[in-house]
Image 1 (cartoon, rainbow, N blue to C red):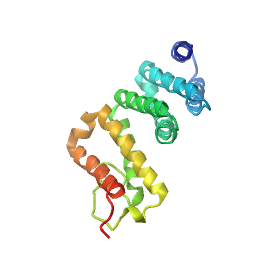
Image 2: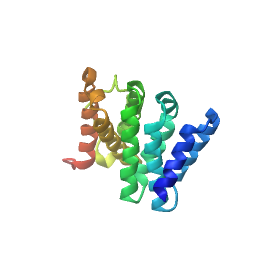
Image 3: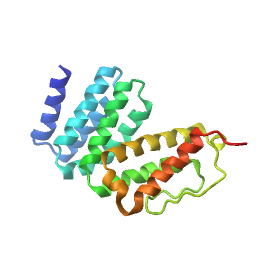
Length: 193
């Protein structure tokens, strides 16, 4: 039943002549359903997002990519059900595989921002990020900083899985991966003090 409902919703959004405002409204409702009280409902909404991402024309998907990306990222780190976290990851992977390189680079900038949350003066763009040895330690980070770094690391993993081509171009792989490695090592390896 859930699969048929999902298919009907996606077919409606794709096939029925809807105004841009109505498409945005339907998409917002689908994203809101990802927070549904029951796990089955959240899974159904996440499945619908994957199907919608595959079916939407690229220009339309580009317009709504951030609207999909940010709430789905929250679902990856906050959902209590492992199956919902996995389906949210599938949404992000599908999205990143389909959108253009410039949009993915914007998402990488978000990831860098989350990773750099532990530093007071973080440079957040992919092209200018450098890893500097600092006095940053796991003990000096707030729980919020730690959660943002974990979020950034999880999404970085999804980006690398979905679009390794972007991570390998123009030397970005080393800076992006070094950044993930640097902050994870701070979180996971006890300081020597």
